[in-house]
Image (cartoon, rainbow, N blue to C red; front, side):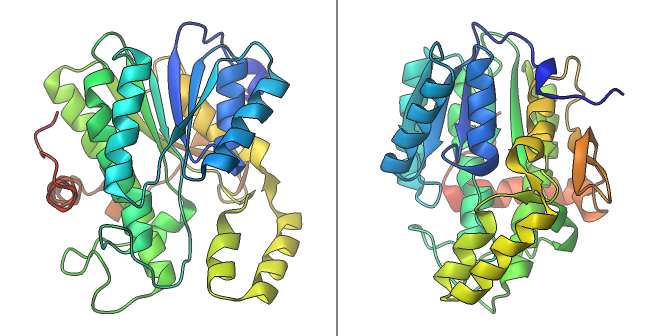
Length: 309
């Protein structure tokens, strides 16, 4: 495998993509590259003002780009439903690529609008609900892909079906690990179901290694630890830029003939940096019985049909 770079991006004219959390970090880079490559790109962002600035930035960098804003708060299932309806309407019922990128990390104890533990609710349940609501537009009028971002942190995770929402006790890193493990299990089960249904839909996952983004800042600031946030900014000297961290995501999005369920991350230094390459899953992330059980539990929690696909 050669060192794949942004110069290897194909012409995506005629395709439509949605990127969640596209106002900063990995999501902003992903949206910009997709739009610059010709894809009509919908930037799904929680904060409308930051989202508008992100769309403007894409248009400045690529004046011919077709970039649009969709308001999406993954921590509110009513917002997810509204965003999905808007996306289906704006795409004419055909979506070629969904990048489930948005996420939160290491937050203090918080709840979503629907009462879920914030990290599990945002990182997994919000994207689960969005993907299921977008299924009428995915892989029906042509081939489609869903790329979901996981993390090296998934190796710390386990799915606690007896306490998915951390009601018996909370550890910010345990909750984060569970949510990122859930992202990988969701990818595997989505791909299995798509194949079983004969849908022209491939589900893949990626992670950015150790990349310099705003992800680590939010939890520290919410906890009132401004000193730790400053320290975290210093640690960026030892991480790769978001433009490199986005490579595995884009690789998963466009690699010809990519096998469903594949997982990509940086190639070097324990998958922390470098060109995209196949990534390693934990043993728990390969448990298909857990993947099926998580799918069913997620459907119950979000009020959606487990048989949507």
